[in-house]
Image (cartoon, rainbow, N blue to C red; front, side, top):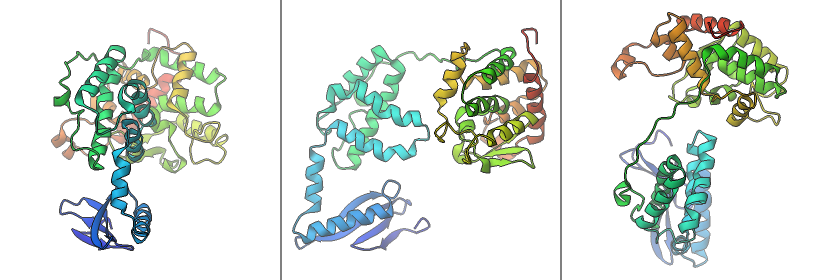
Length: 376
């Protein structure tokens, strides 16, 4: 069905796939209700699977044969949905689209804290722009950055409500809220001076933390990848013979596959991890065999007395390259999986500078492998 052109493609119980000229695909059911032929929209293919659409279509047909009107029943149920109920439904549909687990949890938790007490129990159709505005302004007094994200989360609920036919407008749109602008200050991730990184790695290795946690942290520092990329690393991504790790596009922030050269110590870490991962495809599983949480690594570093964010170790590496080496900027930026140059330049400069990056990462590993002091 993915390659289907514009048109209608039939299934069972009156269900068919409707493909528009734009390429948008949705499920529609043609059914006779009390002697009258009706078309019922069941949702887009991105949100409703074929199996789910078939189940809904079967339920609708059974209801119609029993003399009920599934369209009227659906509208009646929707009419009494509260904002909180609508938020839960919207969250359920949007959840698979969020890559970050923290975003999935924050969507409902922030609404629960700042919005539901104000109008969560009210019908989603009755909430006004004034209601939303007052909730956002109140949240700004406590957590300005959360309030900014809250605006988008509330808007997402109303967009879902519009798509479901619960209302025709979005009271959370910017022009309706007319919120006063606030100064945004950029807060950089806390990072250690590069001369302190080796000592931090040693402290982590000497700690009582779970072995996989310690290995994951050292592997992350050596490879300069993002936390989620290291924590989600799997055996299938490693090419031992080529001494490289290929992170698939779906796990990368820029949605492009990224090759990482593996130094000798990184390969040793993989060997050590293989002895304790219990057969999991994950290289660094938690005690329960799941993916390590970002908080696990962050908490470990902070408990050891280092005022640094996990992401900040990428900054430490980048500063070291800039101040202590002659490696070109584009080599360092490519190692961090950052885009270099504008779209035209990237279209022509397609090399991932792998050999040069391998040399640079070996130098970084050598730097970390010796005792560093402030003079270095």
